[in-house]
Image (cartoon, rainbow, N blue to C red; front, side):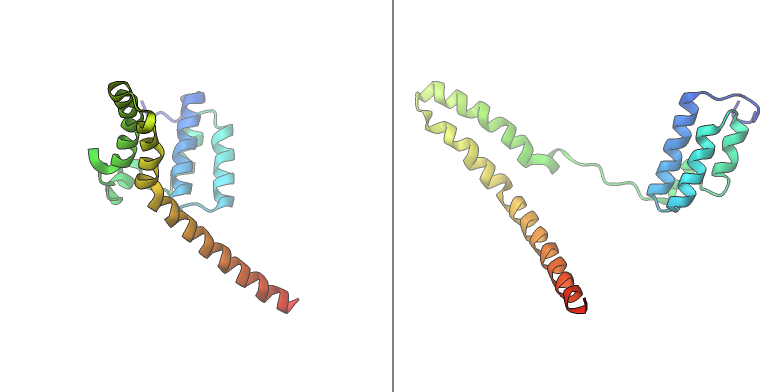
Length: 145
């Protein structure tokens, strides 16, 4: 059925072609100008024969999947901080009713700081480094002006 170039296509086929084109653009196979040009052809396509030339010099999706190594599957423990943090408020409520002490609710922000504090600090350090590099570039530019 795919071999018949004179078969008219619908919106779903155009959207699938645009998605494939976007995937090739994201993979770096197309420049912005090429992507714009080819996406205009896909948007105006009426038949399968109109879309076929757009992908003539691009690899087949099956070839792309074979060439790119698969990402490792994320295991159960890959998101363990998020999983633990989801349980902490429930545990605090249960302990509150069992002991009658509201102090268990202090465990919620404490565990958040323990589980995610290092991640936040790492992001701040990276942002500060980028800001410092930008400041140095701007100071150099000011000296030239």
